Amino acid sequence: MAPKSDSAEAIVLNFVNEQNRPLNSQNAADSLQKFNLKKTAVQKALDALADSGRISFKEYGKQKIYIARQDQFQIPNSEELTQMKEANAKLQQHLDEHKKVISQVEEEIRTLQSNLTLEQMREKEAMLRKEVKELEDKLEILRGGVTLVSPEDRKAIEQIFSEKLSQWRKRKRMFKDIWDAITENSPKDLKDFKEELGIEYDEDVGVNLQSFSDMLPQNRKRPRGK
Image (tube, rainbow, N blue to C red):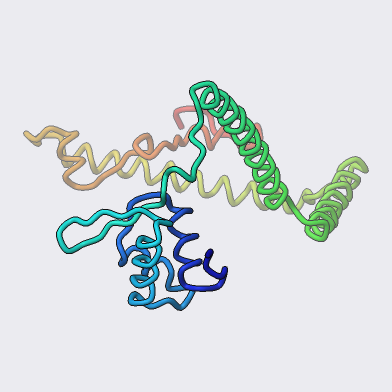
């Protein structure tokens, strides 16, 4: 007589057949905790099933190993095995194709998530339109021939610039005179001495007095060498 489907024996028998591998009572009890079966109940069910011949078992010392009866399973022949392998290969191919499609969809989702939202695009558009309007207004002023710097301001700026250049030229000449006097009879290497004192020439810092002088209007320029 077959055990009731909700009885301990039925649950254990179904588990042993599904696993179809060697099991001891502890393996079975651990896996069947979700059915609220204690180890003693599982052990009792395994022994009852083994005694009735519904499962097989072998004893190894004091331990019993249980396994599903193999005669209840249909063993495929070589042709059936070949067909199963082919079917499995096709299924694996379909699985790989589906994984590839899923990967592409996930990539598209990530791309869409990285794009601006509609609200963000509207804010960006408004900001760009404002910048364009400001640039167009400036361009319109330039096209109209409006003088952005008055002649008076330009003249004052040129005067200040010219005075600063004169001071630069004067101090450059003063330094040269002092430096020549100090180093005239010095036994030290002038380059090493200069580095020791932390002195830098204009050229050392990438500036040139003449290049700034060339920026002055022609009528304010000093002849070269003066």
